[in-house]
Image (cartoon, rainbow, N blue to C red; front, side, top):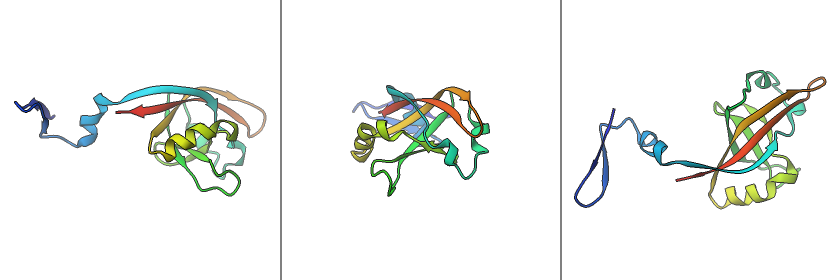
Length: 130
């Protein structure tokens, strides 16, 4: 476990740290921006990922080069499995934020099973602020 020491020059120094991530975690704010759903779950090649999704689970958002939608944002699990996309109708502002270097993430807020392969996964989108 590291120690945080404040020097006379007001600089915080982490000693015996496991990594910078441990230093930054307490400084991160997640600002809720919007509620939406995961689009494209019926088109997944590996639908087994849907069985792993749970309410409260964090998901990663990443811009994707996509010939169908120039503002596409893919939604992945933390271990990189594709879950779907931010709906095209909702991705304009979020893609601009991400293109400007802002870090966004998502959390699963609700899961409703539907007919056949369709599963409705509701998410909240968050701005990660340091």
